[in-house]
Length: 110
Image 1 (cartoon, rainbow, N blue to C red):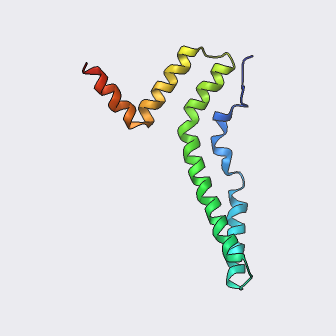
Image 2: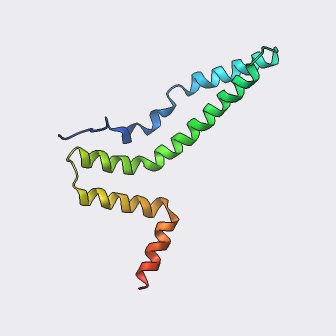
Image 3: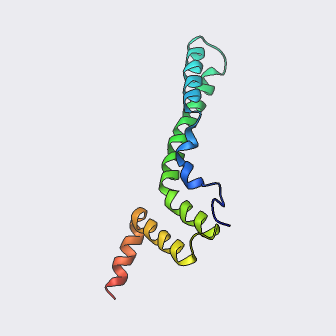
């Protein structure tokens, strides 16, 4: 089967924030309710701020994983073979993990 084994997940990494505007509006409203003294509004506002922080972190991680998700999806869809997928993982590791680059540099001296 050619195509998106995972519905082209790697293409939609920017879609994680589809409701960011609504969440921000809710945060703002909860802040207003907190100022009005509504019980529980302060905690709800704080937790909503945490949701936004986690969305930012999730977006960053998804961007970092996009190349890996792409490689796995195309391998599992039979568009790429194992070797191409592994090459993508190596390129990703070199780009994103300083320990990988250090280990590779150490191996080259042997």
